[in-house]
Length: 492
Image 1 (cartoon, rainbow, N blue to C red):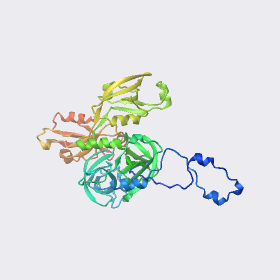
Image 2: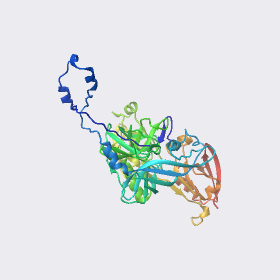
Image 3: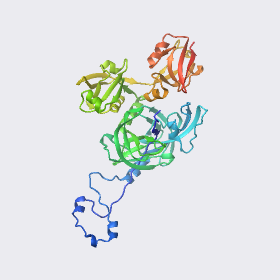
Image 4: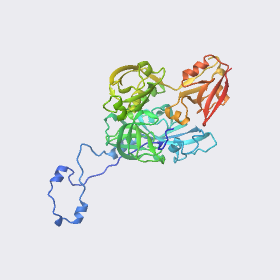
């Protein structure tokens, strides 16, 4: 769903390289003070061999060799295998981002049209954050994986357990049964500036312990379908198999997890994106504590401002998130937000673009109170909001909790914006998993639930409301492979 005109191939990694200077002074002041040598007495060969002067600055060329030797042993390869259920939309290399991620991997089994259940094997990267076996990687690396193996730099291999994964931020936490492991040094991505050098180590195309280098190209990037994460953009060379690997700063501290590239070919084209490590650690702590990550929800649709809109609202600059709509029953509605409001601050932190708001809210804790500064009627005002939550919930319903055969057996979640656009629907719920009566009736994981007994649904509570009457059967309207069908499900 993330692949449009530029296909977002899920990957990541990058490394830096160092050079040495000659004996010539690199101090510009000393270099400029030198007496000019008359052209008539300067041999051509001497001019050609003279080193090019470098501008002195506070920045230092990182010692990449030491970074790789010191922290390379904490970078691991992550091998996965499992079964992928394909839809008609996915059956083709140009439509499936996971094909782009896994293709070219040693042992990868391609997916063919006509078989909805396809086995796969893939290779990603990761890094050890605690000596007792805690490993961070990308959620998309272990998605649908039944077996996960972690391979250390010294070639030891361990079966890994997925403690939890968060598709919203694309962070997953693995556990291996080992002690006294090498670990990385964790840094502060807030200290990064555009132009700073960065280094990545990973396993592109299964080539373990590969290092590439680049610089920070931009900070706080908001990508389509990933608005919660303020990505670090780099020009480090990354390719399939580097996903989940660490992004180091010039001091050797991990500042991000390499996660995505923009590419028309599936390979490196100079645009790589990393998840800031502070975001990943917050998710990691939640997963270790509870087995899952929770994200807050305000309940608004927002867009960026341009100069014309800013002028019409009486703003001096096109900063802020313009509220286009407010969800019914949402935290935003309860706080008094209205379409046409411009949210300019959250808890005193400036909101420059709509993506900034999505990051600030999405990384907050459900139930948390936030103070919003809003521009309305050419004046600023403060509003308080108690944030809601975005959860994937199991729906079990029917005649009785004690009657196992009466359960509907669906795991549902709301459609993302990109999924709604791809499915060409305004509402609906994705069926993440299916069992019980629904599975026996022919409902499949990946179907989009549009209505229950003729009532359109866009929330899990609406489904529960229909089932609260304990019907003997329900008619589910689902969309599958672009087709809409009714499926009767007996519950008695």
